[in-house]
Amino acid sequence: MKAAYIEQTGPPENILVGDLPEPEPGPGEVLIRVKAVALNPIDLYIRSGLVAFPLSYPYVIGCDVAGTVESLGAGCRKFKEGDRAWASNQGLLGRQGVAAEYACVAEEWLHHTPALLPDDQAAAMAMVGITAHLGLFQCGQLRKGETVYVPGGSGGIGSMVVQMVKAAGGRVATSAGSSDHVEICNNLGADLALNYRTDDIPARLREFAPDGFDVWYETQREPNLEFSIPLLRKRGRMILMAGRTARPVLPLGSLYPRNCSIHGFAIFNFTAQEQEPAAMDLVRWIEEGQIRPMVGRTFPLAAAVEAERYLEENSLHGAGKLAGKVVISVD
Image (cartoon, rainbow, N blue to C red; front, side, top):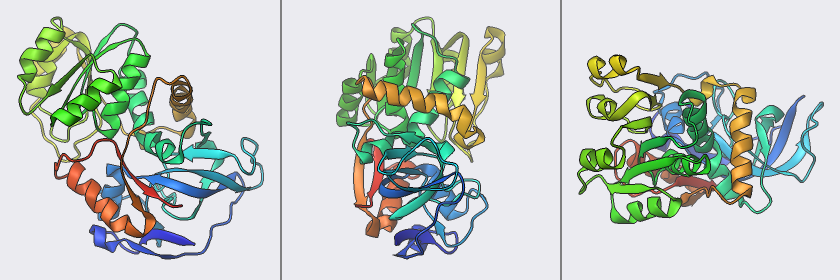
């Protein structure tokens, strides 16, 4: 089978596209005929060696997958051959990745794909959707009627946060770096969408939420806590899920006297069972038409190097051209 893989960590050019043996499903595993793979920043960290997960070479890249069930290992009960399925959390903690024509995935990580959802969108919603849900509801304890701010509302996680807040009955403000991306945020349902290059963000946010924000879902890799924490309301929750090398100043005097809190998390610390409620809500909201996954740019499997380079330019180096997710098509 064709696959995108590495033999050692390093730059995007270390990715090879070639033939590997087709995997066979063991007990509890499902063989997926892969249709689409979505890339995430964690894929860049693993490939570069910044995150030292255990890797078995050749290591197939990619965490998020959507496709069709080809065959079942012993003990599988949730799926049957021909079912459409999606999954996240592959390529992590010793698991193989999914950027290949076929991938074996433990059944516990797989979810049924809604009938009308294309495979590229199913892959695109996987990690960002579950991450957004965990941050808002597991860590942020978001309740109906509360107010949320998320920067980067046209990005992968930001776009999911905007839509989930609205689906849960909240108010949401966001920002983006161009008029086109601001318009995307408006179309996703944001109550306030700002251009961080031209708008007075602090003033507009104070006007939108005079008493402060209940949840601040930080997506930036260099968060300014001196700016954001004073904009929380009493008992407000700050969610941090990015910025491995960041060393922001923490204004304690604005945090603890108002019973505010900071919650940091990484999706790979949650088990498949802990992530299942997030996946169930995602599928339900998709079927109800309340969430629309965003595919920003699609590359063929043969262009996996270019796909990771493009994501790296836009996520780590701030090119700002990407709205939604980078997807690799395996058809």
